[in-house]
Length: 84
Image (cartoon, rainbow, N blue to C red):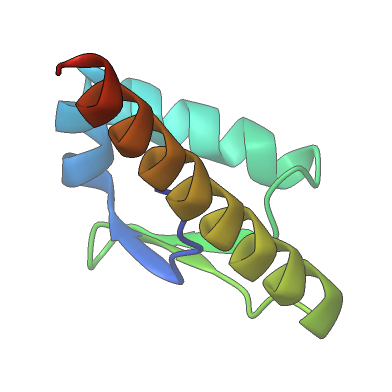
């Protein structure tokens, strides 16, 4: 599933990646400084806020999401066909 999130809790990222909150903050800071992520860290709220994407990037994410759903559908059809 490919989804562009605008706000994510740093604690959630930490649990998902199984690394410390401190390491998540450091990685996010590095990604923001390198301009690989257009966003900011709100340390008081414990979230990273991603700035609104431009229309072209938003369209790309929607296309990737549709493509991903199609691949899942194809996979399900193939595995159901081979079971019989």
